[in-house]
Image (cartoon, rainbow, N blue to C red; front, top):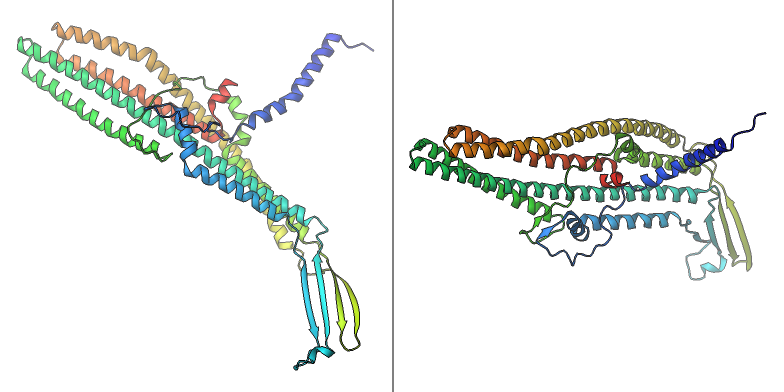
Length: 440
């Protein structure tokens, strides 16, 4: 028999260790989903600046948002029900008097009985009941964590909306400045007789339109600022936000993103539903077993002055009701929920692939617009402006170049917002910050 090569044995051993470690590594990665996404340090005493980064906004939301505080209370309340489910049934004390007459001496011929009884949960009813309560608590824990993550997602969306509105205002002011420069240059040329008065009117009209766009952009900034501050019930309405995470980050590979699908929003929701139904099924199966009742007591007869001790054992006879209907119903529900969870996984995978494709297209379009189209548009406008000042081209040509440059800048700003919104949509689907996936 041929002996194995030492190098081959070493390689196979290393591969075995690596493959054995992969599931554990993957589970550690998946444990990062649906965790508290807000910064762990809630100190907001340093957040006094007029310019807020995304991290500052998240700290303000974590401290001032009422929904987050309500969810923490709901998680604590759910664990209280677990403690309740773990308690044993209360004993029952019974007192009975027989042959009691109507006069004051009636008790002299009576018989009095005192019995203490206790249900005995011998078939694991309490343990099964506690598992149901634990499942409910875990479901509440997950649901409130999802709601917290939705608040985090909403904070990012409103932050990016304000950032977009601020940039739109800057671009509108820049467009107004360009329109003013063109109008001034046209006025000088009209005075020299090198341009028609109609060109000056068009230039002034363009400037007035640009000013109107500035006013609309200012209103949009105010509304976006109020929406963002409402997440932490902020009173100040004069702050602005600053960009801390530039657009254009590396898009995680689709295969890596798919590894997070088992813990995605819809799939986990159905998983908890399936676990809850199965726990209820086990509880009903346990409850169909008879629960005996042990009793003990004392009986005294006043007639012959005798005392008797009583011991009893009661067992229900499951002749008719054995929870057949409930068990059958829960079995069917379990199969239905399992099928729904499998379909949810398919639907989520399709949604992930579509979102990944949209985000890839947006990033590609943005890179082309920023690195290729915008520099050419700026260069073309400056060239047209010099040519117009020298009288080589008509005003309409300069106006077209100016409009093209402004449109490219506004389009880039809109692409920034659309890209960020698509990134947030992926994070909402998977329950994890894409930056964590990219960095790891």
